[in-house]
Length: 160
Image 1 (cartoon, rainbow, N blue to C red):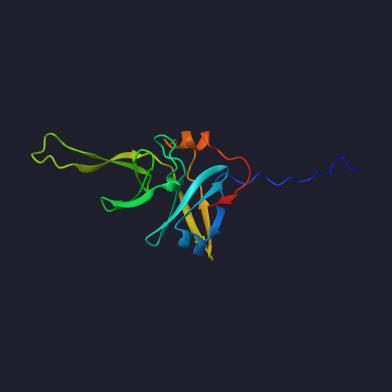
Image 2: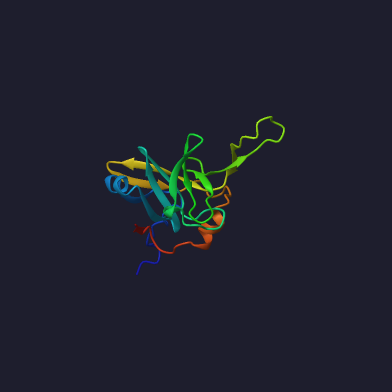
């Protein structure tokens, strides 16, 4: 036995590497899927010709965003959390709410942003395959609490 030889063990898959989540046509047809991306549960939406991905659990109370409806709010596609009707932009993860400015003569509510609350992830399509790349996890986001609480263990298993 040669004590100087070593067995090369492959590095663990990088936490920011793209993960295959499904076939483009299948996701277009179903309009949404859930998938595990590096042990993080995400939902991938296909809406009006674009793919979006975000943490599956709502930042507010962990509601199942994959069961929510998509609505256009203030010119932006948003997922509506089925539990408490929180509105979250698909593109940026901003929480939206309606507010009235008491100093303005009109008491008409206007849409305002709470800031980025829901972690979104990059979606790429390559040769009919859809991949999700996690966003920078070193930057904290409100939805991280529920993503950690409901973390999946194991590989990138896809579910519908």
